[in-house]
Length: 331
Image 1 (cartoon, one colour):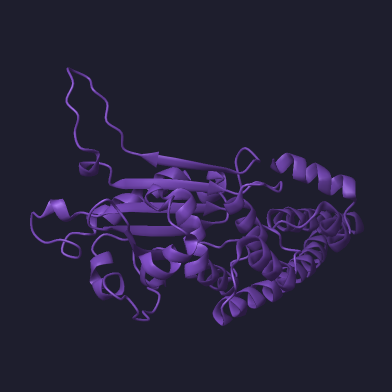
Image 2 (cartoon, rainbow, N blue to C red; image 1 turned 90 degrees about the vertical axis):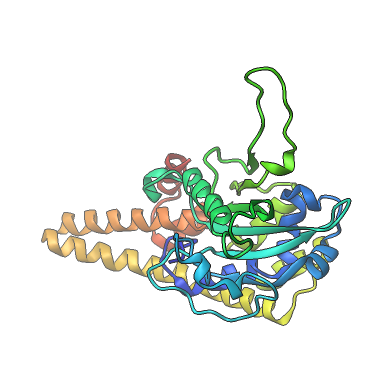
């Protein structure tokens, strides 16, 4: 099961978006920014030298007892093409990376999740608790996969990185959560590498443009829905030095085309639903009331997708003032 990024249950769009995000060049930008072990490493080296194998997209189950059922896909070269596990929760993107250290390189297990919203009332749970569950599974599922028996010294450090297409504060931010040592009686300092194993990073994309390099990149790719393929490609090449591979171009082209179709379908859906609700009410004012109600729901969904107030107003026929009020209530 993969979460819908834009609320229209468009599995095709989601798959293309997550496959684009799983490209080594984009993962390198994310890893360099939020994983301390790579702060001093170039993105080119991260992409070419340190990310191992082919990042898995939606193939590895999170559920206890299932993660270990496909060990060949997340260990070694991991180039097998596994089918998504229907009915299971799967990691969006999962890969190994070898981090350069003072001695022998350290192997990290990194999970990247793309999430449409953090709103608890929409999800039905608090996203941070889900992130904690995922990072715990990344640790516990290593038994008999990364180590055997009681060889707990071989447990690998893990990162679960959550990219959220909205922000509870309205502003973009990046938060980092990890285990820390506190001394309650006397003082004994444990070596950090023995407990500094589970790590969570939350990247929230606000609605306003941001100067941070990583936030700007993610906003351009996933939140600026009106930006054309050529414009996005230009940003990647000129601002980030990322030459798109044919696979990246294919995923992004499909995403841009699908986003336009989704917007048009949503607008048409709102008009049709409104007429149907009005007919059920069986009177002229009921027709108008039903149409307005459905168009309002459509407008909110389009705003969530990142369309401007003017575009939503034009597409739905609602007034700019009405759409602006909806947007204010969403914030």
